[in-house]
Length: 549
Image 1 (tube, rainbow, N blue to C red):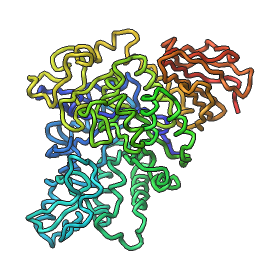
Image 2 (spheres, one colour; image 1 turned 135 degrees about the horizontal axis):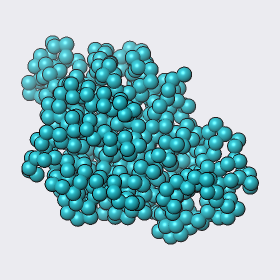
Image 3 (cartoon, helix red, strand yellow; image 1 turned 120 degrees about the horizontal axis):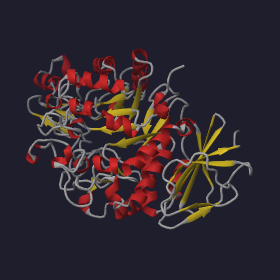
């Protein structure tokens, strides 16, 4: 039987260029990352997700790839990558990579060849039109920043399609040569030891926009089956995690019968989580979980609060979105594309450590595999003076030293400004300080991750929303292999209590994690007949001994 390791993993996402600089040039690199793997290991994460590190003109944070088979020179060499992989494997850490193959950089040799010669074999690797399509201004991913989805190229004498920015021309997925090349890219990095890929913009990768479906391939989702089959043959235990912000009616098309994607980010649950936090009510999360779509047993959701992009609220109603904006991004400069918030979690919650601890306890208790954005384990803030999505992509804050311990370069040479001053500056928020500070957010996250890894019921089991009398409390129960786990969270600033709806009155309630007691309280039973009382933004995780089913 295959090791479905991703079902109970904890994924830590980072950008190599902003994690740690080893040579003093102001840019993070693989040698520095290899030296700081102890931090990720001690945190308790089991898998590292690397944002794009390929050679790039870097107009879009590395998502405009110019070479899929190498490392950007400013981050190191391919040899440095291999040494990093060896160091990660020594610590039992898996690594997954961003697979950005719905488009390339305009500077990629493939596109340069395609635009120079209509008869080039590379011409059909991209999507062209001799006239401007009527829908050229529809479906823009970045409204207010992006001008169109089609751009005229003088050298090519034609229009090329780009779902994203004009310097990111879309690849033609209907071309079998393109699909074969994508397999070669995947095979190359699998051979170097990675455990899978995060597919960027999966819905745009498989769409047939500007091209005709190839014979016998009317359903574009079939390509996901092809990718899964290739991955399974090359490395049976490798997985694919997709960025796919899709409605419920499309979920089956992406997971298939367990033969397509292994994992998908749960954007719908994420957006309802932010609505719940804004309202200080568990109802939006409870309602979403109550109507969750059943997925194959081998498939998994990826749960998260923040990632490297904006908080995408596009699937909430306009009124709901405005509620979240009012709570967490009230100023226009905090918002992006009319649908999202470009702030870090700690800043959105006003630095309230109780509320922040509850929010992450909630995330880790939701059904699926948790994904953590670097710096959130210490409560980093954002730099709103930076453009677009960059406010949450500032250098990691390691200490209160110059440049937050990220780099020895002069400040004006650092890849992005290190946050300095104020409540979230590196002088106040850094790894070194929180390692030594009892009760710090970092120590809470370490406890939380330890507990989550010891609770496979969440990754593998069946989730039920239990009735709770106050709307501010969320009660979740998981059952798996005759084990029962309950997680309770108080979304409000007041003390709330609720009866425990136990199937068997004689059950013994054994605490695992508590906002009141801090460290795990193993062996100290709670009276199951008494109401469960939760302090403001309080939470409890516990097992029910005697609830075996």
